[in-house]
Amino acid sequence: LWVRRRSLPGKRVLEVGAGVSLPGVVAAKCGAEVTLSDSEELPRCLGSCRRSCLMNGLPHVPVVGLTWGRVSPQLLSLAPVDIILGSDVFFDPKDFEDILTTVSFLLEKNPHAQFWTTYQVRSADWSIEPLLCKWKLKNVHVPLHSFSADKEHLASSSLPGRHTIEMMIISLAGSDGT
Image 1 (tube, rainbow, N blue to C red):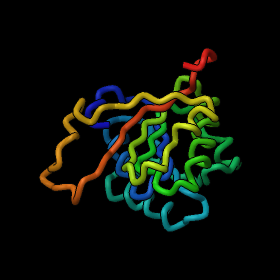
Image 2: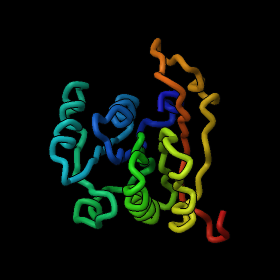
Image 3: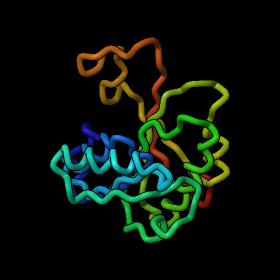
Image 4: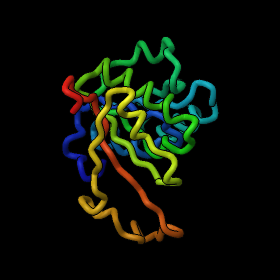
């Protein structure tokens, strides 16, 4: 987000699985029109989103309850979006399809939107690739070295152990499968 901060003013951004909302807060501070979301079944997470906004001087940022894989009035009434953010939402494989179901719905509703996501590769057995095909989505990997994020020490902090972090941009596949 920081590397692309100059492209964010005026963009409509939805963060899914926001938790403490760092990506959404950064996007809002960079001029994007942000909506934060987390599971409607996790009111403490929604409260955390609201507190993050208040602590960062962003009391106007809406926070909505969206549960992955569930079509709800909140999901149906979302305003159009340009960018969907998901930071480390691919944590538990049982949630992968629900996440991509929700993202696919949002991308169908907003065909020019993109889903920017990062995740830590935790197991070679946990892949979203088959689900991307199933939901007619395509992904473009963003190399971490393209924005100097491939170092063991970032922002004066070392990442414990060896981690493989992936970043990708997901969008609708074309009618020709691309």
